[in-house]
Length: 397
Image (cartoon, rainbow, N blue to C red; front, side):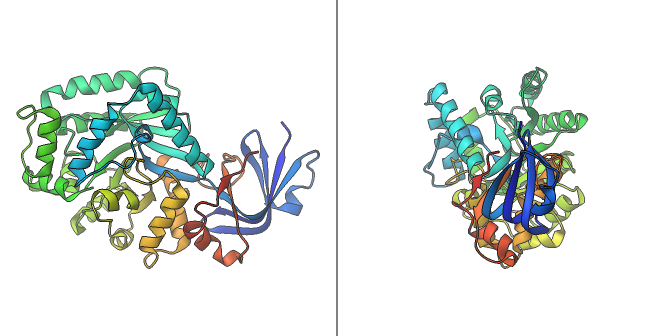
């Protein structure tokens, strides 16, 4: 294949590096050289050159989404439990073929807007396997019936034991929907294979009430979904973070999603365990009416990453739009380059994919994005995290 040189007025190779009049050599889908355009083109014969008057940057990483929920938009709800019940109702009223095609379309659209990799959580293994290799599929398990934990676990593992086309791991839905026995089995299984474990955690006040006192709206949800008397849970007197930590779930391979309702002692635990946190501000606003206090996360030194959540709770799967919303909420706490890092190098390092994604460098995937830009290079990251949404396009080589 003929080599391609991408010549860009500005290159933001990662959150720390900005270069002008840069050249990126691409061959067979990988970057083979980066530097000043005049230097990288020397010695390369027959390469085509594509010129871009603006910024080229790495495509972003979506650290939490549910691609299988893409067909189910604008779910009406009074609160989180009401949202779940409406979602379940409409989800199983659709034909499988229609659902699959809409999921593919949603993922393709997200990729075109600049997402290179997805941490994709779902319950349908075959559907999500069909969606492609540029994902870590978190095969989500739900079950509050203690006696059913072993059967649920064995069935889930049987999917992963086959010859899969994607990277996959088991996932814990949440402490209010997954029994302690099942959570521990999932975590032990993933850790034995050095796999990331995703868990929804401290997303709503009703979750906090349920875990601490064993009452509230979550009991309504479980009774309606599982049947009264088919599950049991006693209030622990603990926060959701304290509870899952007491089970041995939290460590450097745990991806805690949302963490909207956390206390100082929760942050101490999350930091001590070296967990990764994923924030989805648009979904959080929609489903709980609140967003995390990022200033406390930053002071604690916890690694924070960004995700869109699903189209059932967010307006789109555009990571540049998500990043813009996040920066809009926290611009007085975080500088633009730090926010950009949360969608690039931070997740690539935590997820163990930095050999391919997160920055533009030799040997890595040529998943790069162009955004038209006429300002000074000092404003590059401010533009990328606030104004680039709707203007980005993946560079096809």
